[in-house]
Image (tube, rainbow, N blue to C red; front, side, top):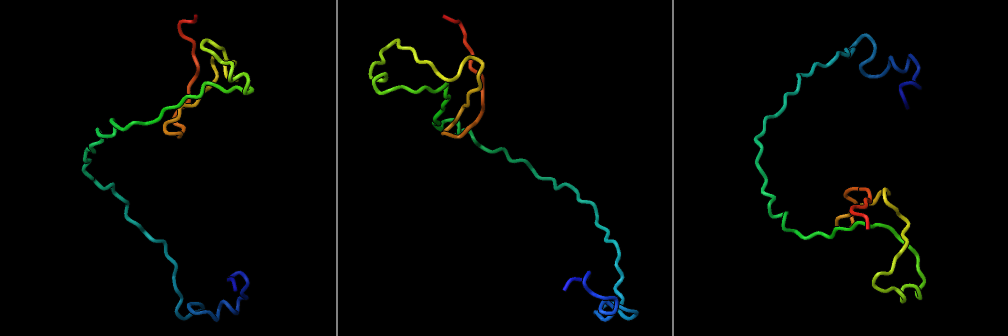
Length: 108
């Protein structure tokens, strides 16, 4: 049963109601929290610099028949679905880390 469902008389009969034993409601006062001063301990993470990771940047995709794949030779050109200026994703160990843009430098 919720308080909103009680009648005035039912509320009067509940503990802490009526003239006897009235519980006064007062606003609580809390002291302000102060920041805890901790000493920064430098962590030694230099060993992390030597861990090998897999870095992937997918420049685009295309779909070929098996015949076209078998006919690929050195110097063959593939048309990809991304062009210069499109966004590419940089992944480290298959986890997206950043995105970038494809640029052409020293165009041949």
